[in-house]
Length: 89
Image (cartoon, rainbow, N blue to C red; front, side):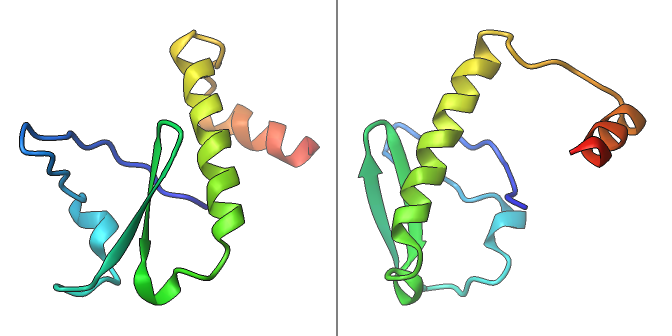
């Protein structure tokens, strides 16, 4: 399952990758930054060729979901109700 964190773009154009998200990456590791519309995708160079089309589709779907969230189209539920709903799927 995907992890989610929020970060901020600085006045110098820098973005901090939250500590939990950096696990598994090494200092000095190189990344490719892909711009797809208003989405930025950060991908390790060593994994660049893997699943690029899936990454772009994931970015598109995430942006759509966030827009629905901002409009209040999502509902809240407690853990037990959520698990019950998942079992029905």
